[in-house]
Image 1: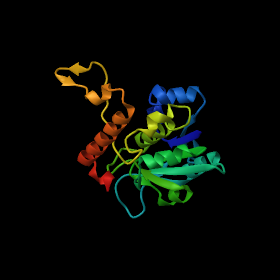
Image 2: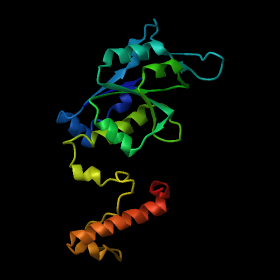
Image 3: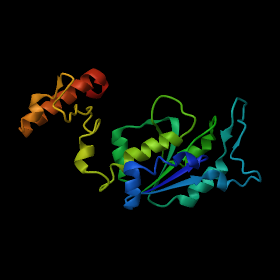
Image 4: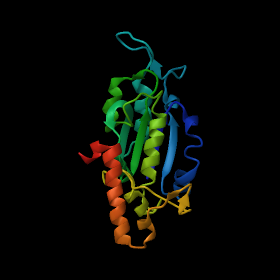
Amino acid sequence: MKIDILTLFPDMFQGVFDESIVRRAIDNQLVDIKIHNFRDFSKDIHKKVDDTPYGGGCGMVLTCQPIFDCVRSLRQDDSKVILLTPDGEVYKQSKAYELASLKHLILICGHYEGFDERIRSICDACISIGDYILTGGEIASMVIVDSIVRLIPGVIAEESHLNDSFSEKLLDYPQYTKPRVYEGMAVPEVLLSGDHKRINDYRYQEAVKKTRISRPDLLN
């Protein structure tokens, strides 16, 4: 899979993609991630990428030309271009699975007061990672990339992500490890039984219970 990220702050991605599962996926050539500073595509003599909004208002608005040209330099027949914006579709695990099946993803990180509305015309979708405002789309793009990469075949064991929270519209069941008793709190006996059917039944019931308490909207 290939992922291209358009941003004005490429240094923000240092460290995030250089550690853990994402780094291993890159090293194993399971994903190719490239960061592009779309300021490099500006035709303005001062490399400006924003301007004041028509109609007045505070802040600066990202202009069309640098982003249009950057996307056009990267886009292929199998590319999907996504704009990260607070008014986009709220990101969920089902969308992560959908995006992980693609060959090429282009993520556009918005910044400043917003972007020229005409930029939407070159995008296939708009995504938001939640009902709150960030200073830009960089962190959102990191979240999306991390959630996608772990789903790419060969990155982690398939069983690991099939049992994740939200994969079956349930939160994940509680997990325990050694020691069996810690400060008077014991691991449930069923997990020590060796009876896999009982263990699976228990875990499902606990997942439903946790979801009913913490996220009842998922059960609806």
